[in-house]
Image 1 (spheres, rainbow, N blue to C red):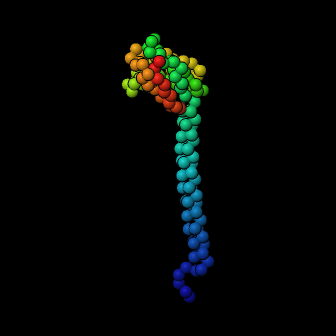
Image 2 (cartoon, one colour):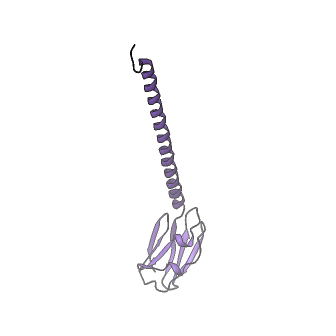
Image 3 (cartoon, rainbow, N blue to C red):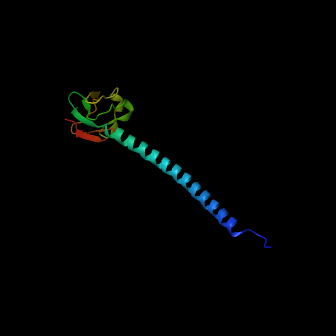
Length: 132
């Protein structure tokens, strides 16, 4: 009489070990794929949202000290999401409130030098022009 594991029991144990390893790998890869998919979805949504927030400078007048910024996008741009620079100096505080799609906000900045560069940045783009 031989002692030890019979070949049938050994094959069954090997099959059970293999099946459990495949199941573990399947669960791990499924969770990894779900995590990556969620991350890509969130980043895509934020990029689409940013592309809807674009600005255009309609007016940069030295004589009136006014700079008109228009929202040319499809989403409302909140006050903290756009910045106004006149000759490289942040003048965002001279603007007030959000800009609705198609709407305009007028910023008062008497320090707009003749032919000085006026720049506006928003999540979707940047626009610049010269004071006139």
